[in-house]
Length: 202
Image (cartoon, rainbow, N blue to C red):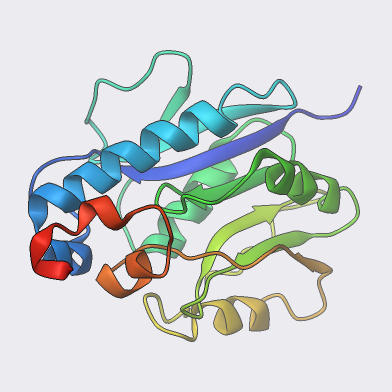
């Protein structure tokens, strides 16, 4: 039997006025909170019950909750996004790990399964985002964890290219591109979410 695969969903506790600042600026704090809650719930329902992997929540604030009891919960801890992802990746039990955000509504079970298959013979896997970042990153972690997060320019169009440069010489697979919803413009590119805009955006 092979090592257990781990799907980790990075999320902030959905709270009014906390997080998703750029999205709040475009659609308002109440609608931004609604987006966070709906997408997180749908993502866990869609991806969290598959028996092929164990699903974890990596949360911030570290002492937030309550969270659904059927998922393991890990604190993200301090530091930039890269430091937090590296910390979580190192803390998990043995086996391949795929880390993704909680604000990517179109990710499917098939794509997660494809990512874990790719980690059977690649050191890392990335899911590119339309803004130049990435919606997912995964690691085989054998024989060791290879950290791609050094000196990455987060929240810029260089995040993916910086991370790939850190993996020079490693074997890397790529997944489909998705929208990573950080602002009103990225939300507007997703069909089916028009209900969040309200009259002032029509």
